[in-house]
Image (cartoon, rainbow, N blue to C red):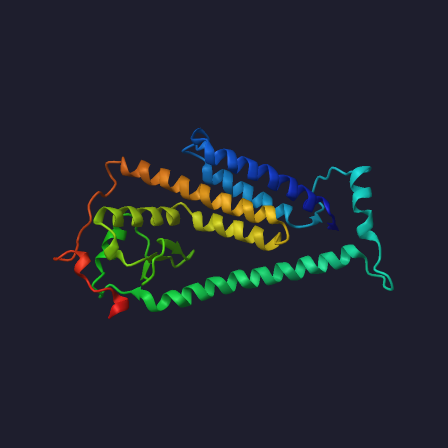
Length: 261
């Protein structure tokens, strides 16, 4: 293995190309093919992870630059005055330290999120047990449900133990509740959480590149649009559950939220 600046430069070029691609995709509906979107995005993320590692492996086929790259990177090979350490070595240490810190923050953020959600997770014995029945209409996977006393957008988290995060559902109509559950569960069943995790890993490795964060935001937005398309397609299917039952006898709007108990 050989340390090389080539992957860094290649990653920057690929990032610009992908941001342009995502931008075009967002504003041209015809580019949203109903098949293969997630396969394409998975391949993109894996390429990004490879490009973020500044090493040439023995099996890597490399196009060497003999005129432009050597002259552009020559200042990085100079030693710091009074030492035998080159500027490139210092930058590599900074990059590695920053990557470790970013991974630590990513893991800590997920741990803290699950801990914060724990007090708001409802059980099947709660007055909101009908939510579990609604979820079972759409998937056979086991979900936990957290209802927060905040004005938040519904979300889902957890790769192995998914948690469906909902605001006070008394603000939602029965139809809206059905669409919310279907949308978030679709994210899980289509493995969008894994794709977003790959995007987060790329951001952790290439933390110094602002274009990567822009790419991450565009990628997340495309996932939302793509997921909405899948839900709409599922709604047209005769097998899609278009009912909400069982509901509380007096309607769920009369149920006292668990966080007010």
